[in-house]
Image (cartoon, rainbow, N blue to C red):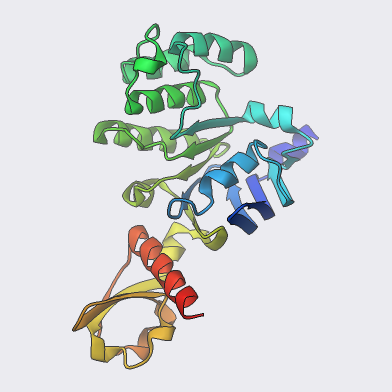
Length: 295
């Protein structure tokens, strides 16, 4: 069994995952993360990113589908899996009345791979006070505290939900460097959601785009960027071909749109640009909204 897991190349497999709440549902969520890779998880607020992560952690009971972490079912092997996962989120996951030092002592007893030396490294890097009550921490300091605790567990899979929230530019750059080092051994992986898509442009190997509880894309970043083109031109260039676009923003005389590169031949004479992640995210959402409005 140990040799089999050693050869297993997938850190995370989410298959046909579903969860229904009042007014919202996740539908057939499927994606995979290879060992040694960083996957950016993008979508607007309320799209289902946090819910998906909590289902991976088995914090919510799923309605359907399957989740495997390093080949292990996340329900049947919950205790073992939680030793392998580190988690930090843009929400209060800490006992606010306590101190960071007290949290570290508790984590050292719970997590078998706890690394006190590594924890102190991040405490020093981010100048985190160990005896100060977390109530008195700023939002950015709380996030740094959660990241320090998560990294010091020496997890094999990191789930980071908006980890850049509240971080200053220097700390964001440091975090990206840490994540690249984290996966460099080819055995550890990261699933990171962020509204700062420029950070994911720099760090992610794969991107999964979720819109209204459904997966719209899950591709290597370079393939995703090659798949689409950003075009701009005169409104006359559209000539009733809007249905061929992924999404469009129109002014009185001009337009900007996202289109599959294979359909560029339908729009001769327009200016063509390479889209970034923000373009792919926003135009995909706008297009989905417009199609829903017309349905």
